[in-house]
Amino acid sequence: MRGEAHEREGWFARLSPDHRREYGRRFGRALEETLDRGWGSCLLRKSENAALVEQALRFFDGERYALGDFVIMPNHVHALVIPMVDRTIGSILKSWKSYSAREIHQREGLSGSFWQRESFDHIVRTRRQLDRLREYIAGNPVKAKLSPGEYIVCQPEWEEAQARQPTEPEVPGTS
Image (tube, rainbow, N blue to C red; front, side, top):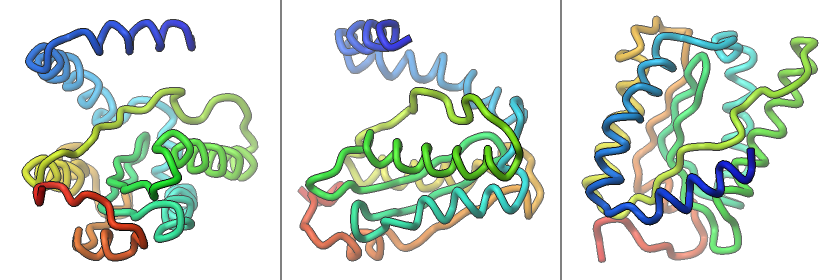
């Protein structure tokens, strides 16, 4: 699978920005709709499992990254995060995924894969993109027709998230 993912990334990198956007519109929408229909085990619908994921997200906030908006859906998570200078998105995701998978497997008496191997991450380059992603995160439970208690959503003021980062990152939309 690693080789296939690497090949896909190389192929995708050769696409023009317009073709990448079109790919995302065409195929990203299908994945979103599948997730919103509640496919999969939906172990995060259980409040204790969702709370465990929330704990993992918040644990190193202000130390390894600045955590912004997030939503924990029954079968997936969306989060905005600013890594600290010496951290990568990959290392942050690995920490979140390994801890939460181990704890939920233990709690549920399960084994095997819990999270998908790959994630869909994006670099936010403008304030407009940031605002659009924040809106998407906030609206995801409504779009999926979830009831209160079936998800966890957090929307701190973006400036608060940035203030928790001790280094001075480039602020989207201000350069």
